[in-house]
Image (cartoon, rainbow, N blue to C red; front, side):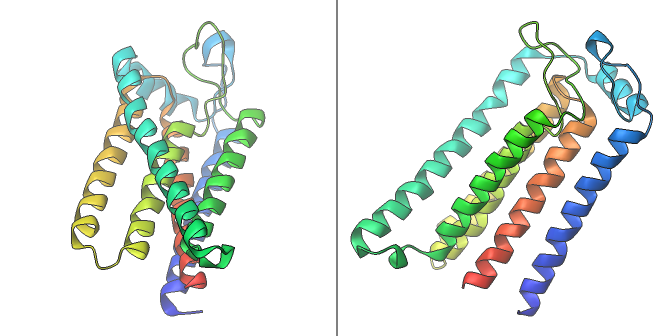
Length: 217
């Protein structure tokens, strides 16, 4: 294991530890019936104060869907690239390992999404179409951070000599992540800790992907 791989693994573990620490805190610290329909909310004072400050903005909620849809297009691009490599090489071994690693992260991301739909930590601060839904972690934030973050690494790995991509992909990705995260924070459909949890979990998955790429290459 190289020094860089060890560093990436340490960062990965740190993000996971912070995520699970926040999750544990939400289960036991300042749990109050502060949500809609008296739903129990962890770290209630912080979450309710922030939600009162931001209020709810429906337009901003819709606008933050744009970075997510673009992220799904990025997923489709890498899936298509892997398919092209498979067809041209006529062998699974001809597909770049970083694409397999990317697929593994996408699957893990989907598993975590489904898991937290069933393991409820916090409910949303607002009703969606009259229904109270699970809110933690923000899947929107987790997916945007994971897809764009791993995309930066993947583009650099697959196209190392393309200077334009090396510059513009990180710039565009960080801009879209910033817009999505800030938008979700301010639109009022999540608690503050939902966004924090999604951000931490997304970062953990990005660094896990970096570890995979380091090992495979």
